[in-house]
Length: 481
Image (cartoon, rainbow, N blue to C red):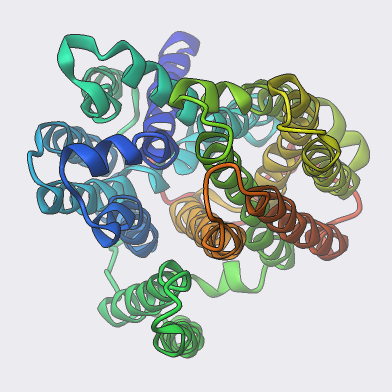
């Protein structure tokens, strides 16, 4: 594969990651307009978000296995085609239930598309070459997470051709078409040389466990049924344990489990997953709480709400690039820990800006905290991904990618449920937009996020002290050609 072809292929898969992440973050600022235009209920408005994240997380592990069964390129292209058509359906929906249904379909096809991305990077680049594409991938995670509210605000403000909120979905259509064309021309077919089985029991157990956990988390903010939601989470956790036991048994029988024993026994991968499950809680919590706070309490427009987190997006890209290519080889796990502490400092500065304001905090007072927090996120997201996947063989690249992304999505849902629910529970007591309960809610919610980030810093001690040299050849067979 030539350098130009490989670069264009990287652009294609990174664009796919970008539109997937926008599928979550860009919608947060559009929800008020969607609710008004479609006369959506509170439950339907929540389902516009959770319908996507739930089906996406539930389908990721299955999508990874389908990548091996169908071939990486075929699975990726099918995922992009379905995602693009579902985005078009979202933009054309004239009723809330239709929008929710289209979002569910969008999430399912995203779950087929995304697991192939890291697998392609593993396939197209030798271990010694992966630092730069991994840095680009990691930077894009942070940029898309923070840029979503900005782009959503811009599209709604421009109201191109009278599309209003529909533009946040229709923007995916031309991007999707470009990705399909590039993928067909530049990405390798990457079919597995070994016979691939689906492990239907594993699929059912993993999907059911993740569905129950994420459904319970999404409903925690509903104070009318806390026991039902807690029972769903507990039931999902039990099923997940059963799933892991079933996976080990399948591997020992010579089957093809969704999570091979080689991954379960790889201590570095397990440790990185433990950090990952905590890391995105404060990240997604910050994005949700900040955009809601400035719109509800400070009466910012959707565009201004997006601009508040712009420094976070910019510095995340900077941190990911520096962290992966320059700092990780020198500092090992320390760069992840420094990133988590830096992100905590950024969120603490936002809390200070709110509490010290004599009246309402000024726009500029949020920017230092957002910038420092974004830099910290970048120092974590790139090195953590590289550390997790550095020694995963190409034979297990799809499974590892799907599992790592599933954990990240689960963590994001935890962020919405913990940090977000904390914020909404306190603001529910507010008597009006100017009530100080909003300040208290933001401070307490971000405090929860900081606490989780500090716990992740401690857990990161389980990562290797020194980064494992990427040039060392893998000892596991290469299943793709």
